Image (spheres, protein in one colour):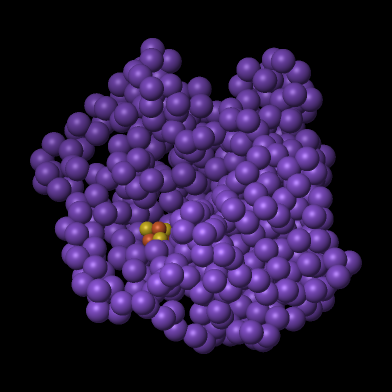
Length: 472
Ligand code: SF4
């Protein structure tokens, strides 16, 4: 079958250190299309659905699609596992360059099973795969892991995926950091990686992806890129990132506010692209071969965290760690996002868990210092969650289990679907379905009036800000 699949996968058993290459049949590649299809197939055929997500036999799977590593807009790669939060199939996607590097090293995917006897790092240098002790990295946050590894694995050649303290402590919404500022965030993949005593994977590849029909590929690519360059929504993301959707979500009553009690936030302006441009962003960046290029590198410019670096505080993070917690100060909200990235916590679930904690504390159901609008208490609680310290131990289980333990009164405001905090993320569900009275409060009316005032006199292009659902 002519294809750009490499059809070369690795099974790495961390229990005994065995590394076994394998291929898939043409039938499988034809029936299970792309990285998403192959990832689903590999999970279905390697996992024991009856065994817990953390069971050594259950795999953590990294899979890329046949276009990954070419010039085609195929920027995202997937991680597949049984989620510890839902016990269900989960696929979590990340940008950056790590997936492209795995393909350049010659692999379409890794199936990682077992549990290493000690904390381990997997080094993949083209066809040479080595398991190395990683005890020296334990306890380090993701930024510290990069700092520790970069002298040996320079950024120019090597890409890194790692977990932070949250993954080490099996927080059920721990993420996997794939190159700095890119995460496979959803579903708790970082906890599955932690359960395997796997702290990091480093990879270097030097192969080019062979194309079956290079001339046909060029023609198709030219047409695709030309269409993308004309798309006004995509152009909007290039200018303002997904944060440009904050004003739209606010006006539409979709912006989760105060643990989803409302859909509009009086402090929304502090979370959008315009505030971030002034107070945080330094320059435009992009994931590998991405023509949208929505990313912006940023630095905190003032205050006690001045100098802290991060990436665009994108829509989901701004919605969940800003509006949902009523933190409207641009720098305070961004610092909560950077802390999640450092600790290896999914920003969407973290914002939902913190919102749940604030409401539970307000109602006297949970003895914890967590207050809406108080970034300091929320910052400390994130640290406690990542270490499973005090009330952080209960909250590290996610809102579903925390609410079950606190009782029926808490279950009333535990926002999750089958154990995963909010799907679709960072949007108020009843506002998506219909205009319910619940979101039509004074805040929403004020938001509309605010935006109407702001838009008066603007050009049509400026007024037509991107809608976040266009990006999904
Ligand atoms: S749109 Fe943004 S986040 Fe998505 S792949 Fe492109 S640069 Fe990365």
